[in-house]
Image (tube, rainbow, N blue to C red):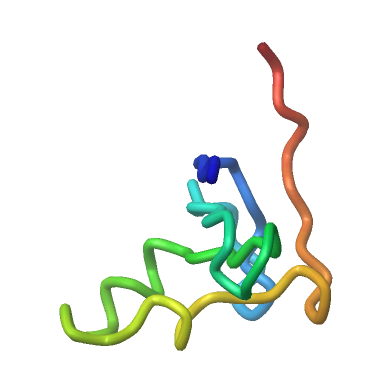
Length: 67
């Protein structure tokens, strides 16, 4: 698995955040995108999958990754 952080536009708020893309969140190599603002709002026992966005179902915009 390879999870990473990437500047991503929150699909509900429209704000850019350093979101975490978690490999395997939705099974196989299907990523789940978790935004820090959503993580702050939930309790520490909240399953991450319940606040993750599925980029296969929700349009997710990212900034270009420059290495």
